[in-house]
Length: 427
Image (cartoon, rainbow, N blue to C red; front, side):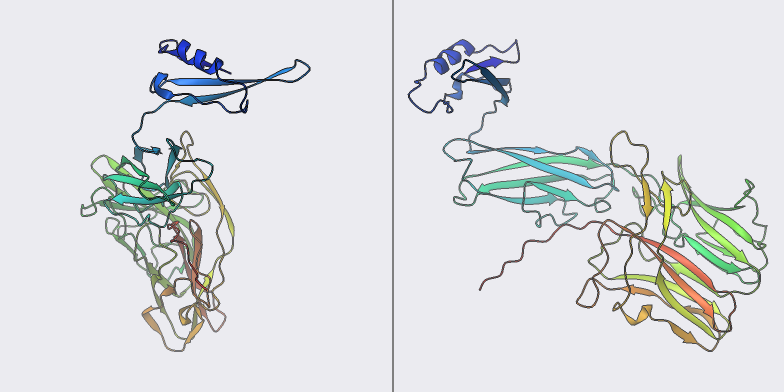
């Protein structure tokens, strides 16, 4: 048994320690070794090399690396996590516990209590050595302090606390169009909502808005005429402004030197189709454990059936603001990765949700008739939405006489809320 110092600059009492180890009695268990840490230099890495020799003279070696840290408590803590994070990325913190003194590491059970200040999210549900703060819950430009208290269950007087300060980056502007796909007729007006676009660093600031339009197979972005106001938060397109075709509508928001844009697909059919206007209530990710409401309004002639449905499809969404099938804003949360790809939407059945998802017939004409999507939190009739997933919902407005339907899609992304404390059942 021998200790070799990894750092040539640290040689403090190394020979005395080696002598102490070599003089230990072999009458005891040869697999155990004890010595005082007083002769070890703090913050130096040591290798403990164990050599085993069998009766035939064969030898095997097993090295292990140890770093010395001084502590006045029986529990030494090291809290590990980033110091600068992105507001749209999950943040993970882990605490490493070294058991010292008279505490038996093999039999001692530990309890962990997490907290964060300012209180951006409830982390008390994490009861282990790690805590994950879901993306979208931290405020841009704010500095937080996360701490964890670790104690032994058998003796709460044996405890220690570790904390770490981290900051949230000031995110870029967010251009948001409530509708991801829209199908309308060329003889009906329609609207697209961009009012949720904002500056995460200053939600009260005014953004410059610019809407543009191009045919799917063209690079020309001037398909809007002079009768279309392109600088408003809500784009209003009069009837006859666009010919039947497939278009890409872009909303660009800017402030000083910062810019962001978002796209949606517009399909214009010939004739007078029902028109749907969707307006999100909240920007960003939603909590799947809470009730979700999406406002929607329908304008149509009489004899039309309205219904919400889940869109089940696969698509390719690669990178940030690169429109492939449907535009989704994606941030890379892993170092050295430029982009990430989402291959398909999550699926969910709407049976047992609420009456709002049941088809409803209207015999008279409709003008901005509200028909919201209302998704409750999980209950006995409905399992709810998954955390950290994308969902695509569609509001259909289908004429009963067999005419072509108008529809609008909306994409909902859920966050990954913390797990609550364990349930205790006493019999």
